[in-house]
Amino acid sequence: MSKLFSKSLNGVKVPHSKNTAEMETVKMPVPDKVVIPMKQHMGRECTPTVKLTDLVKVGQIIGDTDAFIGAPIHSSVSGKVTKIDEIIGTDGNPIKAVEITTDKLQEIDESVKVPEVTDLQSFAAAIRASGLVGLGGAGFPTHVKLMPKNLDEVTTLLVNGAECEPYITADNRAMLEDTDDIVEGIKLVKKYMNLSTVIIGIEDNKPQAIAKLQAAVADIEGASVKALKAQYPQGGEKVLIYECTGKIVPEGKLPSDVGCVVMNVSSIAFVAKYMRTGMPLITKRLTVDGDAIAEPKNVEVAIGTSFSDVIDFCGGFKTEPKKIIMGGPMMGFAVPTINYPVLKNNNAILAFSAAKTAEAEKPETPCIRCARCVNACPFSLMPAAIEKAYKAGNVDALKALKVNLCMECGCCAYVCPAKRNLVSVNRLAKKMIVERSK
Image (tube, rainbow, N blue to C red; front, side, top):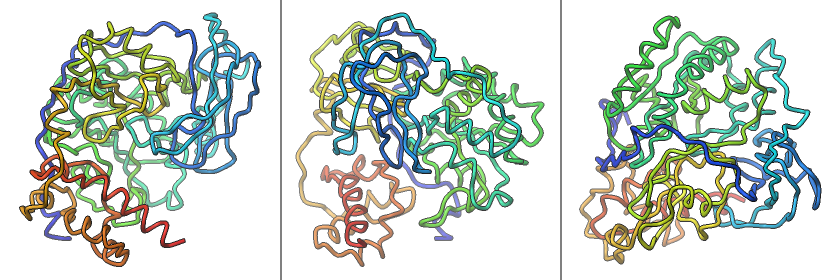
């Protein structure tokens, strides 16, 4: 492993396609209804705290869990609960969802108050109450990151502004439009976690954001901005830690084990907004783009708004879409219906025509043993060997091949000339290990 980390990690050059980088965020009007899933985070699904026909207000808790790895769900609108049903989650499993027909009044719930914070414990409790999870895509509950077991050993806050996925520019707009909130959020986390160092990692294809944040954090002791090579997957948590600090997160370990806490720029900006207003996480900035979208935009929408309503707000389709993706083209998920709801960790809606997806949907052919997948993998894993071990059901081999290090970035599948579904196999292989361990 020492040789592997002696220089910048591997990855792939992908087309940036940052078509909306110069487009300021526009706020979408409240839709006629929202569908708010009870699981929008890593960890346990929330239980609805409302029932059919209940009247709800903006910011009201409508779902919660007593699990430490979890976060409450709030209503993004005011209106009436008209359905509590199941939808299919992004992992393919059914999850509960609360449908609210809006009254368009957007009355704010009485529970929405500026939190009282005096120390790290009350700060973390406030962040949990806000419903904040990682807004860069993973959805890990933020309050858990703020309370590591080895707090005294954590010295560095890494703010992830890499945004390495093609098309997505929502974080770039956050850095340009919410600069003051990012700075205030950094100060709050730094203060309550007693951190000495702050590094904001931004890919060098975002010069405006780099310049603006360099100036903004100039007076924060120990804070700096690091321009990163524009190479996918620069925004991967372990990749970012290595590129910014030179530290390696071992298999099965967390960023805190190497003295770091990592937060997305949009997450850190929300911390400041919540501490100032007391309004929980009820809206999301996302990029709407792709060759099938009539009017690409960066939009702020109420969580639970259907993709259909968001796309209509962006002028609808200019050509028949073949695939609609939640997130980026590398790590996003194709949604089963255009009525899928916007989630907390949803940073893009991309719609592509058949012509655009033709190359990616070519049928698999036999592996030609070219090793491009190994060369592309940031951790130099061996996806072809993992695929062979998975098909053989050889869990010991999967463990030896370190499949659990895979962050499912998709580099292997992207470069494979045989169009093998390697990242999907890696995902299934990790599940096989968990299931066999039971």
